[in-house]
Image (cartoon, rainbow, N blue to C red; front, side):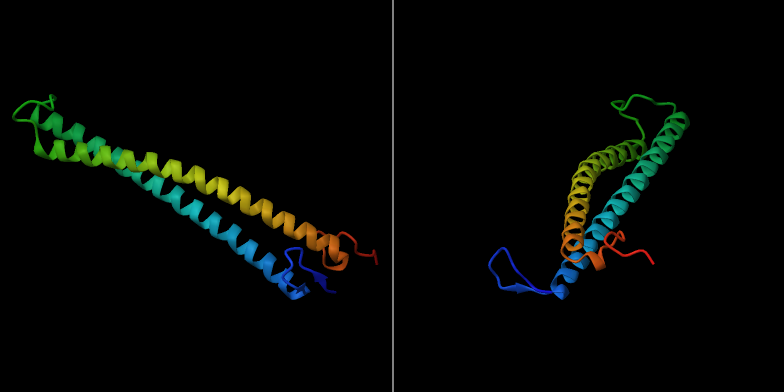
Length: 136
């Protein structure tokens, strides 16, 4: 079955529609993969920041100096504090990236559903949900 492409690019075959659905499924999987990577990075950076917080507290107890402005404040504690601040800033940035990735995933899923629905309406025998099939 062939139909005319609404964009005026000629005739679309069943093969090109299947390719379109595969492409949209790939995009959904890619967005899911990206979201998983971002979640893993957020978890790892948060864990590292918590570990640094414990190390800073231990260093402060060891030296007995709590004031960061004190001339004898531990350079290790100062460096660890800066590293922790950088990690937390990265976590904030990753949370913003996660929101964008989540929105991209929702868009990709909607496009896939729309494409699958269109294919289902055009060719009831190949509808993914089993619609249009005859009962045996």
